Amino acid sequence: MLLTAWWPTLIILGIAAAVDIRSQRIPNWLVFPSLFAGLAFSLFSHGPVNFRQSIAGVAVGLTVAGVLCWLRGMGMGDLKLCAAIGAWIGPDQMVIALVATGIVGGFMALLWAAWHRSLRECLDGTGELLSSWRTGLRPHSTIVLDNPAKLRMPYAPAIALGTIFSFFTY
Image (cartoon, rainbow, N blue to C red; front, side, top):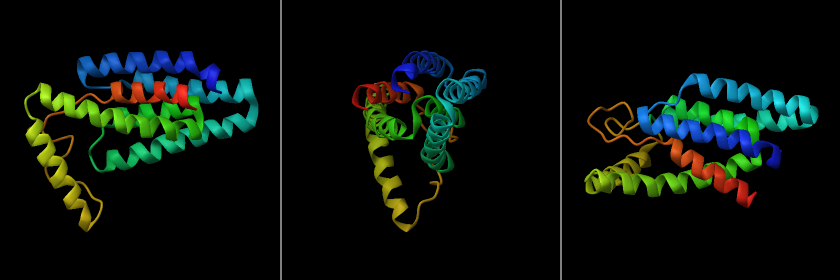
């Protein structure tokens, strides 16, 4: 699935990143057709074995991004984008893409916070968030995506860079 997924994935990620940067949203008109196209392409061009791989890729994307979404640290558009990308690249490459996305996203968050002159607040919030999880993994009371007082960063560019990285390492 690696070579056949390159161009559709690159196009999906490019559009998602551009729209997310501009509007801080990832539209359903992009992710749902991409998800279904990835599943259909997998089934009709590679058969049931790769279709199962495609479904597993969706499951990996939904599981990992779903936890972050449940913790209110990632938006639903990011979750749906991860599912759509998982349909195209399968579970093994999706794991690599998500790890790379986390690393890239961390660096981007530091740069984003520095650019917006809130690096100290970002680092303090990260420490507070991590220490609050010692008592159990649950959403923080104030360090969440839907808090209008907190700085928000479009995450589709991190997903795009992490996924592109996965094509070169998988």
